[in-house]
Structure formats: structure tokens, C-alpha cells
Length: 494
Length: 95
Image 1 (cartoon, rainbow over the protein chains, first blue to last red):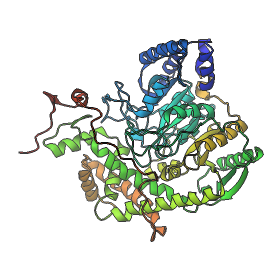
Image 2 (image 1 turned 90 degrees about the horizontal axis):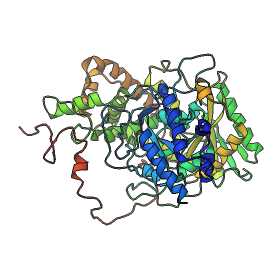
Image 3 (image 1 turned 90 degrees about the vertical axis):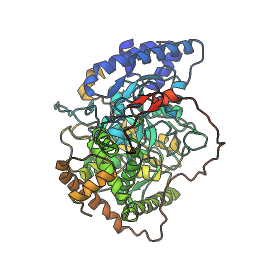
Image 4 (image 1 turned 60 degrees about the vertical axis):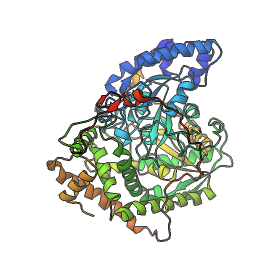
């Protein structure tokens, strides 16, 4: 029995645990075995198998006493950007390479209170900056997918690449991520799983290492839409420790799953048909629209006229916030210190050695756009365009309930074949950054395979605070797509 | 806006980042590429647009100003690169 436990969905594992068909300890053991078996994928920075078994044992006791929480005994992985008390939390950087938080992030605190079991901390692009998980101080993460007949490893996407791989390779039932410009949705699309970024303010950012605070939001990875709803349910809610977390009731995220789409209007933004969009993704997008229509939705073309400016807006605002947020790493109170001849040199050496290349690039861009003489031309300009982007969506949501788009312009590429030019790399985020700039909920659902056999995702974006409709439409796509291919690279052990 | 090597050195210093001289030229090219690309925003008419600082429209709450967690000195110092007698040890700042 225990051999197959790691393949269970979260919802089924919950049922099995409640019916006492197996124990949480057995489920944790199955996940730990998977985690060890797939170490070559480099998904985890820190594995916590002992803690997982202790937590599972406690979960079994609570189940026996009839005190099970909503995620009791469910093994999950946590992106190494969430502070976990007593467990090293690195942001995949050298500067926090030995950082052991003395406190717990609100999101993980809620997950443990719900009964979830911690398998470990997953790798990422350093501080969340990247789209391929190549920017980790702990080495690149490999996708469990390879092209059929080709052993060369592919990128899993980023920045939450480790969490995506842990879910796709069946090492855990679900995982947390954070999404600042697509860091949940893009790796979910590349690895054939489901990922949701809720509305900005839905989850507390307290204890999540900050990248770009006006854009960062926590979210969930799972192998299907319902499971992502279940994980997100336990993550969401108001937190007095985060003044940007919304003091609003959290709806039932499962409520719409399986419901007919009759009466829903879904927009197809014509400006998303960008140059460089792979023809097969364009076809899949049409197919997605047909699927939704067949399930009763009214699908119509809509216009988001300033979409093409979202990416450039993002690459001013995000680096500006990076330069400010990462100023705290000075080698004095925590983190790496490299001694210099004086204080200024100690700062420069500590930060020079502690940050990776992409983090440094973004700190420098941010410093430049915030510096005297350039502030209005770059930063304020970007904030103005950001308002125009928000207005575009507000108008579209007077006509439709949600928007359907591709998640990425192409499928995953091989490690080593990434573009040298940072701008070309940034184009990976072209369809995802808008939801962050506008704060809207977005989710990616695996919808098909490319001609070379790799997963492709479709993205649903909804109105503020309307995750239930996003999940309802996501579930409808999932139902129609019937995506159930396992990653070829690890088929036998997935 | 093209950025030259001297500007890279200046930004690096403002950001307190050590960037070895041999890397400055390449970085100048990369940063110029990124800044040149974001300048496309100049095409957007923003004359009568207020900058957007936060997407949250919810008003923020007041809370009483009182200590919620205290007496955590050892926790606060636990990750310090250098500490002594309950204090952070930092490089000499005043000569």
C-alpha cells in the first residue's frame, strides 16, 4: 500500500486518513522515500524528514482523537522564502546561507496549525528573482520532465521551481510558493501541475522574505485544482502583522469547483496574441476557449490595450523595490559578513559575495531608477503606467467575469539553452506579470502537451477577491483537458 | 539611456555592492540593454495619470502602541555574524 501513497491527491489522502486506511506516518514515509529517490532533481535546499515524521506522528494522534485539522497529516513542501522557526531559511542565497529564523511566517504557522506535515524547504531563484530556477546559490533545479528520447535536463521554470518539481515528481502532495511576476504560474505550466496566486492581500506576507513588496503574494501548487484550493484555504486570511493583508472573509475556495459555467462571461484579450507566441500555444488557447464555451460560458474577445507595456513596467517597479528591500542585508545583524578595511568596504564585500548575479543586476537597476534625476522618468512613470494597467482590467471586468490567456509564450527550455540577454529571459513573464501589477488572482492549469511532448498551461485571471470563480473556471479547463501524463523523466517512480 | 563603466561603478557604490572592475564593462552593457528596453514606456501618455503606489484600496487599521513581544534578546542575536555580552559586534564606525 505505502508504495503508492505518494501518488494520492491531497483530497484522496485526506479521505484515506480520515477512514484510517493508512496512517499519516506511512504517508510521510512514502513522500520521504520519493524525496530521497529524486534528489538528483535538486528540488530541496533543506530536507526535514525527522521533523516530518514527528509531525506525522502527532497528526496520527489528533486523527485518532477526532481532532484532525483540515490538512491533518498531509506532507507538503515549503518554498525556502518562508521563514520557518528553527529551520534554515536561505532565499537560495549566500547572504542568508546560514540563516535560522527565530520566528515562523504566518502562512506556514497556519499550515502547521491545520495539521500539514513539513517535508522540507524547496529551492528557488534567489530571493524569487528568475524564471528558470538557474539563479540559486544551491545549483539549478531540474524539471522531472525531459523531451521524449532526450535525456538533457529542462528548466522547471521559476522562481518557485523547487516547489513545482517537488509536486510534479510526487515528492509531496502540495507545496507553497510565492508569485511576484509569475513565480507560481510559470513553473506550474512548465511542470504540468496547477498553481494559483490569489489576490494581493489574500495571504499574509509576514515572515516571507521580501522581494518586491507591492507585488509579492503567496500561493499554492498542487496536482489538481481542488487540491490547490484546499492548500490555499489554509494559507489565506487576515493577519495584523501584515498591514497589506486584507481584513475580509475568506470564501470557500472549493465552492465553484464542478459547477456549470452557465452565466459566466470569459474574455480573450486580443493583445495577448504577441509576437513570439508559439503557434501551438495559440492553438491550445483557442481550444481552451472552446472548452469553456462547451461548458456553458459565453466567451468573447476583449481589449486590454496597454498589455504590451506591463513587462517593462514590472522591470522598473520590481527592481526599485528590490534595491530598497535588499538594503537590509548589510552583514551586521544577521547574514553573511565579509570583513573589509572599513565599514563601507565591509558592506560592499558582504553584499558582493552574498548576492547572485541576477540579484545584483536588479539591485543596480533599482538603485539607478530611484536615484536623483531619474526617479520621475523611470519609477514614477512606471507607477503611472501601472495605474493605466489596473484601469484596463477594471473596464474589462465590467464586461466579463474572468480572462483566459496562455501562461507562458513557450514550453520549458533545456538547462544551458537559456538566453544570455537578460531582457530575452524576462520575456518568459510576459503573460504573468500583469496579475501582479494589478493585484488580481491568477492560476495556471495544465492543458496539453507541446509537439515535443512538454506540458503547456492555460491561465485564468479573475476579479479582485474572486478566487472561487478563477478556481471554478480552472476546474472546467482541467475537466476538459484531462491532462494526466506523468513526467517521462521519472515515469516509473512518479 | 546608455550606461558606461563609470556609471556602473557609481551605482554599485550607491548600492554598496562590490563589483570587480573586470565585470563593470559587461554589466554596463546589460544594464543599458534593460534600461533601453524599459524606455518604451515613453510611448504611453501618462499626462493626467496619478502614480499608483498600492493596489490595496482597503483603509489601514490603527492599533494600540504596546509591546506584544519583548525580552527576545538572545533570539535577536542568534544569527549575528559577531556578538559579545549580549550586543552586536560591528566594525568601528567613528575613528
